[in-house]
Amino acid sequence: MARAGEEIEARGRFGGSEFIVSSGRWAHILDRHPELRGMTTIVKAAASRPDEVYADERGTLHLLKALQAAPSDLLVLIVRNEDGKILVTAYFMDSKRKTRGYRRFKKRQLSST
Image (tube, rainbow, N blue to C red; front, side, top):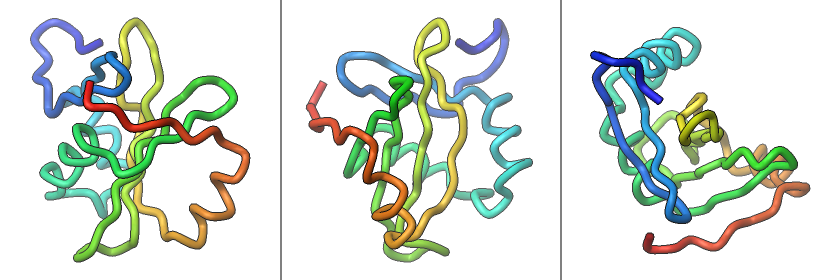
């Protein structure tokens, strides 16, 4: 969860559980993936309305959002449950890499809650 006084950049919900993107976490993501700078609207859309969701063997969620006018085909948000769900990272991925990388992950049903 965000520390006291830390602004929340975005909120998302999947499977009845809310997750947050704190300003501190967002700064860390931009440090590692500067290509996401200025793309908070796209990140918020991916957080609230992903096109696909996968779960890895540890239960970490991978939220994927298809993109049209961006450096790549997909935006991936990685969400892990740590005292409430939080966004761990975000990055671009192309659909070819997605096909290879998500074969072993379990695809989750999208829900409206």
